[in-house]
Image 1: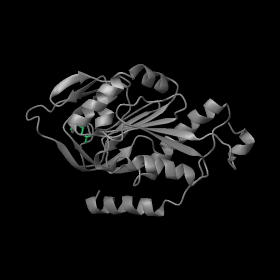
Image 2: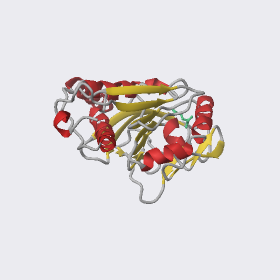
Image 3: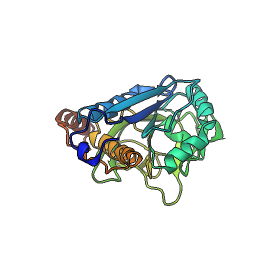
Image 4: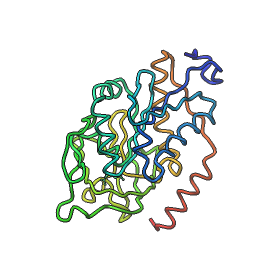
Length: 265
Ligand code: GLN
């Protein structure tokens, strides 16, 4: 690991920040894998070494040197296959989370982090990494929550979040858990369409219904995740975490603004 003195300049032999992309062959709805590209690019632009490990169906997640695990969304059939693979590695994932590992999970991936989620129409046990529960809609279960979403992030440093959602499951947070954001006005449904929340933030675990992919248009959210992942990386290396240099995000924020203007929020 690099010494504290090397952190600002980042030495060539710096061990990389490791991002594990779990089951990209199953969980990649609406280009969710683009989130990993954003995380990787934002580290490289700052001269911070990064390695992305893509773990495909049939392989085991290797989390020993991981700093951030990414799980995308998926249709029911793929979500089922991914869930079977992940349930067999539940203890390892729990240890990773207990040791301040960072997780970003989108939609189907987010649902599976909870105690219970919906496999098709059937409620099944999830990974239990956060106290959330996904249920079917009351009334017509074919009634999906679809469309653009604008939410104000619970972390004021992130500000507004924009994205797109398409899900059947309704997710409810356990008492005392923080949502990732509050859905703004009438733009979007978020977790369940009832309580105007979207996603969850619990320690290093972040879940959201926002596809898009979410990070290209929400660079401050990407930096929040990277800050947490760098803190974990620095702890593993026994040195202070580097402060993230600001990047030129004019294009990303213009894309976000364009969406906000289009939706008139
Ligand atoms: N199959 C899940 C649902 O419809 C998740 C879909 C998704 O990831 N977009 O609730």
